Length: 308
Image (cartoon, one colour):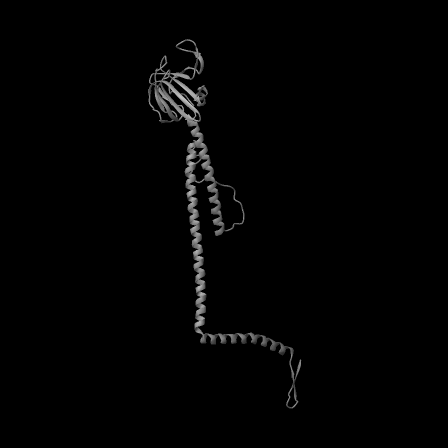
């Protein structure tokens, strides 16, 4: 390549011949020196600025440090809040587990289940084949969500167990207050409910209960839980105990020699309430046992058989 140079003064000219290598060298030198020049100029200007404005640089650095310090404090605070939240959730879960364990033990006892079958003191047995899959680390948000889901499940199970407990308690209470069983611990059935020959007149007469004969002073027991509504002498019955069991049911125990309860007493199923005797219209030691539904005598036989 030829470059022609002209001089204005004398009109002279000069011819410069540049080869391709020289041109390439010049271009590379230009593109290398240009950024170096800018860099040097910037460094020089920055140095001059630093020397002339030292306070501004210090303030900028201090501001940057303060911003980083705030970020560290914020991150620490967030981590602390997350830990406090997880600790609170863990405490709630522990409370749920304690309540469910206590409730489960009560239900196991109420249902008369084998202790080895439902042991609330040990973790339930679990297992299964190993599944080869890509494992993934659990993040904080996933962990908190898992705690929330577990808490909801425990609360739901707690409500279900309380409903089950209420049902079982009602069933057990119903079994306690429903007349069932014999009114004596020892003795034999000596007369049925319904029409029979009266032992005093020899004529057919209605017998409103069942008689159990036995030894004098034998125990007479309540066939269901309830409240004593009468305890004393009554015409024909001799010394009588009457118990109200609720739901329209009541029972009577007549001809006792000695009464062991009084009006207003609460009695349990199987509790001894009197001693067998022969008071009133009686031919010998026995208990006249009646079951009444809404004030009307019904056959006690089905209630006696219900306990077998």
